[in-house]
Figure 1 (tube, rainbow, N blue to C red):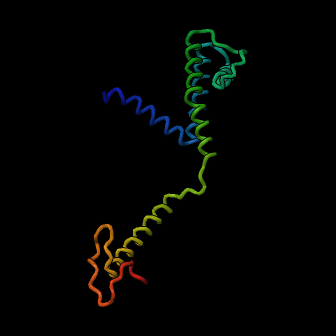
Figure 2: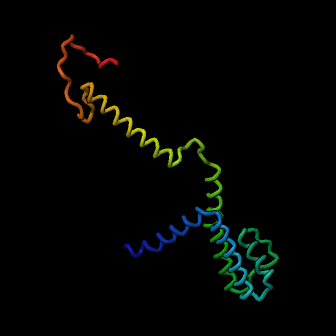
Figure 3: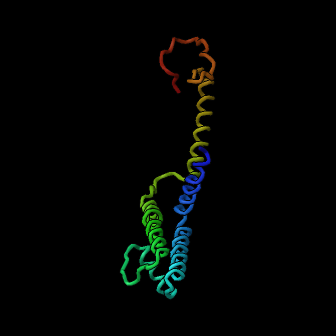
Length: 160
């Protein structure tokens, strides 16, 4: 079962890698266009300019119809190119730009979160020290029980 999941995991990791970097996403798009244009040039015996134009028009799903594949190899490649663009590349580009638009500017950065955690630890330590001096038992039971006082019994918390 583990062997069956290896390929989908690798594909998922590759998509995450592509989606998290606009440079790699644009580079992969450019490579896809160049590779498909070169293959089209080979299969259909067209000029390289016409072949790249065909790849761009096909990848964008515009499909002007001025150039269309005649051989079965070029048709299969066109189907793969359209599928990859529609199912992977365009959604990844859209998701990347959408994630950039939906940014919470009030969110804490990692450094700020770590500083807050350190401050809370220090406050907790100080609170436990104060509770121990006052004889108040905290929820962890770290302080000693209150000592007997010589004054009247106080039913409330100690006053500062």
